Image (tube, rainbow, N blue to C red; front, top):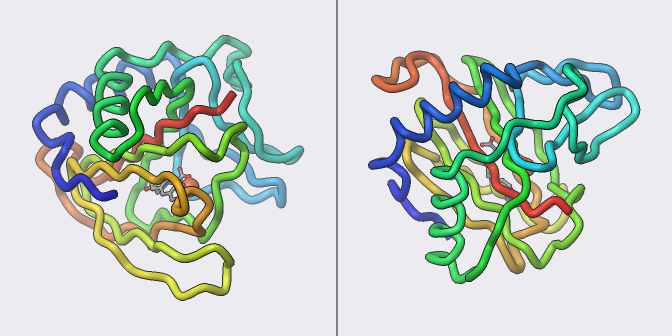
Length: 194
Ligand code: MD3
Ligand code: FE
C-alpha cells in the first residue's frame, strides 16, 4: 500500500534523526558477496542491522566497522513506522531494524528480494526522503514483468502479505536538487529482522 506523502510533514525531524544516527554509524558502501561495492551507501539503527560482505548477507547486532551496537532507533522513526503499518492494515508492527539507504546520482539497487528476515508475515515499511526515484516492482519470480512506480519525498509504502517477497529495485538516481536533502535521496526501510 502506497501512502503518498504520509511522512512529508515529519521529514525535517526524520532527516535530523538520520544525521544523528550517521554521526555514530556513518554511511558506507558495503561489499556484496561477489566482491563489488554497492553504489547505494548504507547504515542502520535499531537492535539489528542489515550487512553484506564477502561472506554474505545477514543481520548483525553490531556495526562491523566499529564493533559497537548500532545506534538506537530514534523515537520518531519507530512512531512513523508503526503508524504507517497500522494505516496499511498491520496493527502492532514493532520494527527492530531500520536500514538507511543513501542514493547519490547514478546509485541504484538491482532487482532483489528481501529474505534475510525471520518472519515473512511481518511487513516492511519504507520511507522516501529527498530526490525522487523510479521504484521497480516485479513479481514472485525475477522473470515477472516489472512496473515502474515513482517514489517521491514523503511517500511511505507498506509491503506485506502477498507483496512481501516480490522482486523489487531502484533505477539509477537522476541528478536533482531538493530543498531538504540537496543532491541525494534517502530511504528508510523498517523491518522485523529477528
Ligand atoms: C517490496 N530499498 O533496502 S524501498 C531495500 O528505495 C530496498 O532504497 C529500496 O529495496 C529503496 O531492500 C526500495 C521499497 C521496498 C522495500 C522492501 C521491500 C519494497 C519492498 C520488500 C518486499 C517487497
Ligand atoms: Fe529491498
